[in-house]
Length: 400
Image (tube, rainbow, N blue to C red; front, side, top):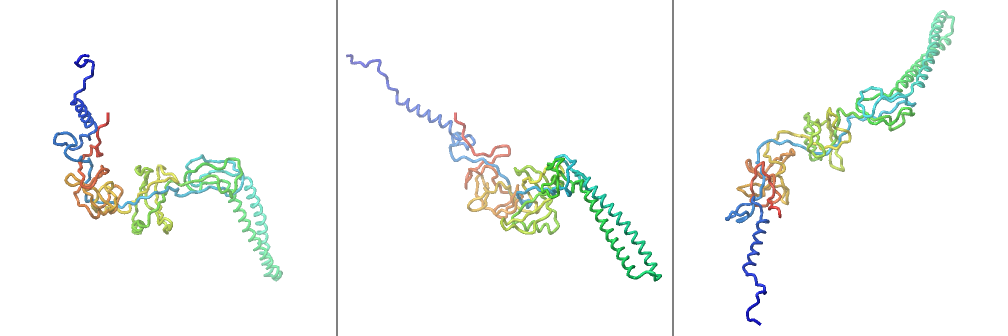
């Protein structure tokens, strides 16, 4: 056997090559997973080296201005008037003169009930009235003759008194006859079912040819008055005193309605009335507002978001409402000073929904964070971005 090593045995790789591969893997991982270039640069120009990352935020100034007192609530739209149209006489429905959903005016004929039985009753009442009228006229003529004979001492006083009583009896019967005629005429008029108010009819509940009666609770159709229309809502008793005070002073309070997203405006109206007692179960008071609803965009039983403008133009320091935060110490904002944020406890006041008044804790000209608060803490470094930039938490590049 030869003393020289065989040429077929594998050679060991140099140790430096293994460490080089490990270093290469570390560098590649650092390149892919290191935070983005939004972080402040370190001494070597590489992102992230040399200190913590600054959080991009958008700020708004603390301004001296005016704010409105706006109360929010959830309300329900209600027809200003709702009427169930019922027939006032019984009979067969021979005509329906409206279309489902049609807009009608007051006194429009909606349906017709067979008038022939009621016309016969009127004719009978008129005939009876004529008979009794003839008897009345005959009694009056007899009374004149009796009075003449009594003056001539040719008639007893008893007969004269009897004739006077008979005349009064016929006069009373004549009034009863006239009442019967008027009642028959009224019943005949009721065979034409008329709209009691202007509005929009719903779906008819009885078809032509059916027998109808006044005791039917469903009626023929429902008419809702949607122009104007109303909305009812409730406010907590802590807000009631402000609203009632303004109403007693004769001020007309504006009420705005918004859609389900609380962004799309639906209508603008005025506060009309308040209930006379607070609901003990909820501690709220009901209010009613009126809206013209010219385009009929509001429908009865529609749920809406209500904003009641109780007071206007109150001077105060204001900030955007989105800057207000809530924590264990109460209300606070993130105050930006020299590139860092400070947790500033404040005392909020009234709000109009978009801006909120600050009673204590801030001074005019200071800046508060309105976007990018998710990753903030006391003393955190921030980078104020302009309106066109995105105030979001920094993220590293996507993995490949």
